[in-house]
Structures are given as structure tokens and as C-alpha cells.
Length: 121
Image (cartoon, rainbow, N blue to C red; front, side):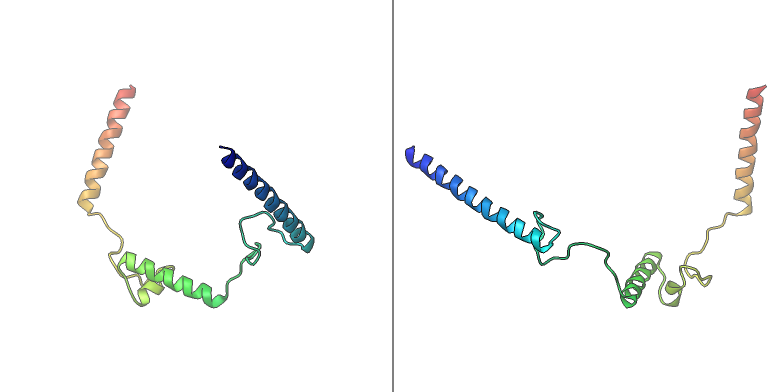
């Protein structure tokens, strides 16, 4: 058991020595003006700030997104490029309701309102 206690004591000494070394390194980095002292990032990584992207990169990303939208909507080619604002949209189109269906819905709604008015009297 005495052996184990001495090993633990040595490990604690080593830990305190390493901690002192780290503290000295942190102070040196602060003196040099590094902003990420104490963080998990390495000193070679970017510290932050606004990331910029070239116009070509934005165009590639936009084209890829348009292609994804086109695949999802089931269109392709030129129609995919005009999805955002063009009227040359191909595909299913807007669903319409027959005149008979609209009349049935209107009649049902009139009947509902008639029941509401009758219950209010």
C-alpha cells in the first residue's frame, strides 16, 4: 500500500509541474497577442471573424441548391433555373377544383352558417 501512495504522490507532483508549464505557455501566448488562450483550438487555427466567400463559390452553391430543388420538384433543365421567379414552370402545376366541388363546399358552408344563426336566436 505504501508503494501505491508513493506512486500517487509522484503523479500529483508531475501534474503540478505540467500545470505550471501550461500556465507559463499561456502567459507567453497572451503576451504575443493570441486570443484563444485556454481553448481547445490549436494555435494554428483561425481565431474567428467573418468568413468570406467568392462570387464563384456562391454561384456554385446556388446552382447546386437549384438542382436539389429541381430534383425534389421533379423538374430539370431550364425550368429548374427559372423556378425562383419564372413563369415557365413545368411540372404538376397548380391544382384546381371543379365547379361542382366548389358548389358542394359552398352549400355545406351555407348550411353551417344557417345552423349557427338558428342557434343564436
